[in-house]
Length: 125
Image (cartoon, rainbow, N blue to C red; front, side, top):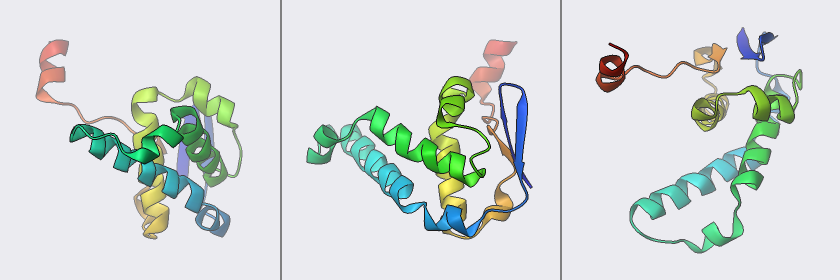
């Protein structure tokens, strides 16, 4: 069972449907474009694709698929309004990779919890 909690509402799916696999291509391609642009930016390059991609467009495509993964029990607006921004892209990418590689048994609970770092633990002390 996979769960997603948004605004104190818990949504569950017992399995990932074939539709989630079939419909994932636009989201996976969008994620690939974002990664390529990010990697180029780290090298100080500005790829041509960066001019044709907006963050809003990328998020819309990826969030639409994430909603589909959960059987559209919640809307893209629910994700935009209630999903923690520091986990959103990571979690959607994790779900995309798990579905693509047919390892969905690793999926459990969304939003995922960020790993604690020594620096974060020091700040909390």
